[in-house]
Structures are given as C-alpha cells and as structure tokens.
Length: 72
Ligand SMILES: [Zn+2]
Image (cartoon, rainbow, N blue to C red; front, side, top):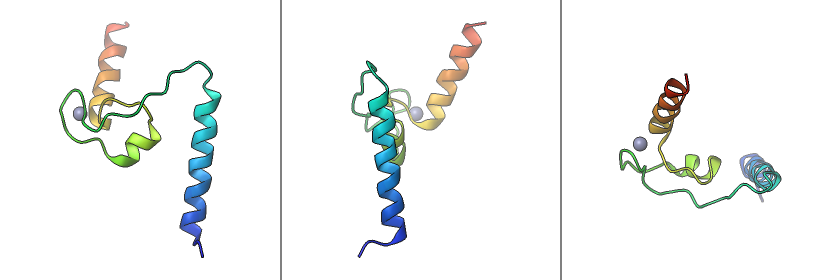
C-alpha cells in the first residue's frame, strides 16, 4: 500500500508534467548529468525539477547574476 509520501510524490510529478506540458512551444530537453560550468554532478532532484537544466544550482545562480549584470 502506498504511503503518504508516495501519494504526495505522485501529485508533485503529475503537476510538474502538467506545468511542462503547458509550456507550449518550449523545447524540453533531458537535463545534463554534469554541470557544463563546473563538471559537478547535477542532483537528480534538480534534474527533475528543472528539466533541461545544464548547470548545477550554484552555477545557474552565478550565470543568472552575470546575465543580470550585463543587461544593465
Ligand atoms: Zn556547476
């Protein structure tokens, strides 16, 4: 019998899939296993939550900060 954590996980996955499906026209690629910037492994939780991600969380934050800086 599924416990509450299994049921909650199923709901999260279903909502994630719905949200991704709602992104019409947005290409959805498989997430990378290793970060393109630092080569560290990208955690499975991030690879699922940020589908198509190419950087680990730390490098993605730095990347976005640099982009914001150059956009000024
Ligand atoms: Zn990284």
